[in-house]
Length: 513
Image 1 (cartoon, rainbow, N blue to C red):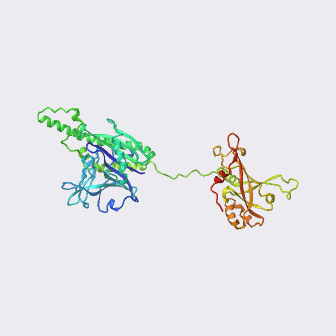
Image 2 (cartoon, one colour):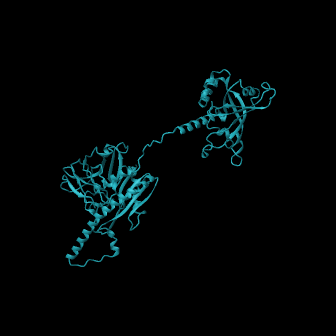
Image 3 (cartoon, rainbow, N blue to C red):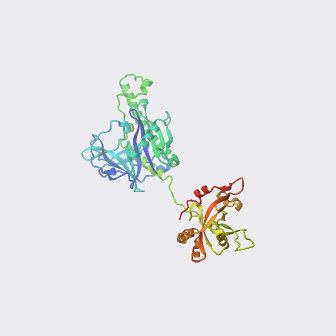
């Protein structure tokens, strides 16, 4: 399953932004190398982060066989005394503790965040103490104990694979603009084959310092397979709704606490609260900085918890539809008999027709000049321009007749098999196509006898022993005219077929010897 999950936010300063995304990476993926994972950075293992929630479906209420690892980086430096101790927080709306033990990791080059970002549209990943300074993790890696070849890598701002940035960015902008409906939370499905298909779940969090006292977010899954995404719709809607409700519940607690604090300050100052106009209500407070999701919820390790939930959602979605090899029922004796009869009939009708010649006087004076026809094998794969290759005995009457007049020979082909599969091939012979070829016949030179034998016996293997008979020779029938009967008149074509059309098509691409 090619998919990724992302947390999106409409920043009041920078507009639609990708805050955090998690992607499934296989260990044999050509887009990753050792440097991308941990050749320069040590990883800190933590205990599995619970994903239990009373609002999750039953499938999500099972413990996940996953563990999350921090990968250190050089994103930012913080003045925190120590993070070596184990800290415990609660998952929003659950009360389930999440224990995370950190250990020192290697130091990278300290850098600063780009000026085009702010705390509101940037993920604050867990901080790591390396003994001399505090640095922020560059990515979160979740391993799956059920399949060690799979890793779920979470990064800030952009996906692990750079070529996906365009698709993720377009999905982000569309989720929070064109597909956004004011006052409506919930899922929406959109996308195309070029940029992928998206299921986006939009919601808002209360923020006392934001304009309108609300911040708009979206949870998004981007996938290349539209049918697969639709089949995962119930699972994704349930999981995203539970995550959104948990985040909203925690944000409401912080929002209410801040509102109560503001009322207490106003009451202690014994001043009436200033009236705020509607225009001021929908403006951002100019004297306050935009707050991160960590500050908005009051949970320091919120992105570690989001990483665990994203990883588990991807894992469940990947198992929504799995390919299995299902053996069909055994062939019954009756079916095998019918199959054998059909193959025998098909083989008997294959490359068989009737050659027509004029009775020679030396053969029969009584019927001299009468047409004479008899069944004969042919091959249409050994001669050019749709001509036929015949293997005949010079002792038979057709060969003796055509030796007298090689320019007046005809060949008929009937009962083309598998012509009407819609009728279960049960049509009568008069309903099947048939045609007569008119032309001349020549003996194949001795120099091409071996080539002709090799080609002819590919169609008629039973003709191999005839090679030792001195009276058998190969003949090439040159087609000069074709009269075709497709079946009943009025329903099928009946008439002459242009020679150039037949020679171009023939029985397929013929091999010229």
